[in-house]
Length: 110
Image (cartoon, rainbow, N blue to C red; front, side, top):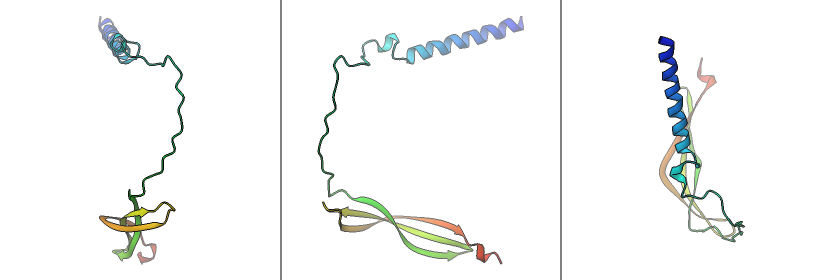
């Protein structure tokens, strides 16, 4: 009797999983109004677009290296860098964001 109860629970669980999988698939009646294939072939055409020059590129640059409590601490400053059409730096503005990386100094163990 206990085996029949486990089997029926397992069967009900399988039916629920199968129903949910069907309803989530693109073949279910819920998605019958949507088309997943094109009736005509679509050819992508390349577009020549120049990237804008007034949008900054964010770069992290090493600002300082300090030695504190047996660690080397590298502090990086984030900059907004503006380039012209030839790729030359026009303007470099520091932001308020900084990041630090710590490295253990093996020579300070003694």
